[in-house]
Image (cartoon, rainbow, N blue to C red; front, side, top):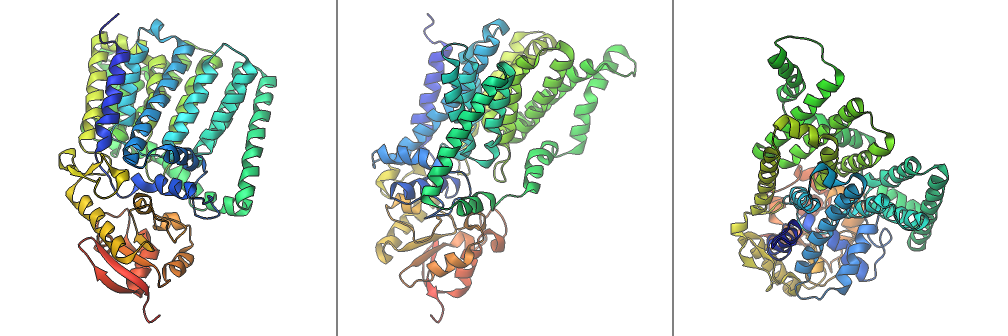
Length: 540
């Protein structure tokens, strides 16, 4: 047995992410988004009824469980370890599923080597915090793995496939397709009778979910919150238009499509119509090279979208060239649709978080052809190592944070929950000021518009039905928020960065109408370096 097998190397890499990288960074936006809701849940609040949430609820309760059982001291560090570990499970289940279906050894690839590549590339420098997309991918990957198995009682497996595919759908709206995908896959792999049974099991689980929802709120309230934010035009924009705009230059896109013609002319010295299989073979290679160039020299997130396009072309090439059956293509189509669903987001419209599904689809569809084109397996190895190095080194600047060399300020003096976490000077000072303001003004505070994790950090409860007071989170209920905030018992700590127009995801007016109203109409009573303090309406 090798002293350092790929399997052992993977666990060493995972330990590095969990124990070392988990320490760094604490940006004030996405990091605290889901924890703020989970904190409300473990303090007895019900989603949709006691607070506003614009998505399906599974992620909130899933991570409330971990928050409930983890110790207070160093809790957020342990949450990050769990986040990295759960992400690694998504990679493991997906690749294990592909291995069970396509037998990776026959292709000449090591399963654990692929797990290393896919983990490093997929996670890139994304933050290790609870997030609906990563949870949806985890549950979908478990369903995928179960679907790949050919042992045991098929009806029991269908039961759990239905459960996990529905759990995936109940993390985020863009994963609503997941149960439908698995229903079609069951039909393709088995028969109509099994697909009907699977649909019946799904219906039972969904009925149980609706029963639970109606026990805590009304259906109308539930539907209003989960359908209020996005429009059909957003789907068109993120699900289709971005797949063209990802090149960000029409000449690059044109060059990608013309490359097969140029390659043929170089070989034959003739301008001629190409066979469709030949054109698709070299178009796949062209997209592959484009994705590599973007990964190395531009933005690995955009590279992932280009690589998705590459996989779609490879799928058509394999269909026209190899004439495989639908049973062969079904797992690949499921994986690619899940990757596409991952990108349906106004905030993070990329496929990179499910690079595993794309890489494995590409390997099955095109690896042998790529080996032939490159004429050596060592070129493939060099590409894999280079791609991993770029993704790994991107962690020197954690997600939406300062460079890792600047993250030297320990946060255990701010809150026991933040023990082992390090941040930059500015964020440390901001959190220290926040702690001092709470000591001065009491626990009836509101932080606006960002820092949604404030009440979780300081073991307090918000007086508003949301902790991230931006326009996309209050769901057109600005008047209700302003009315609650205007109570004289409440003190509003407005971030000066907002007042100064810094670090916003949009214009001051549209970013947080509630905060803008507070700044213009509430009494200004105090200020620090990072906050301006307001209390009640003027002349109230």
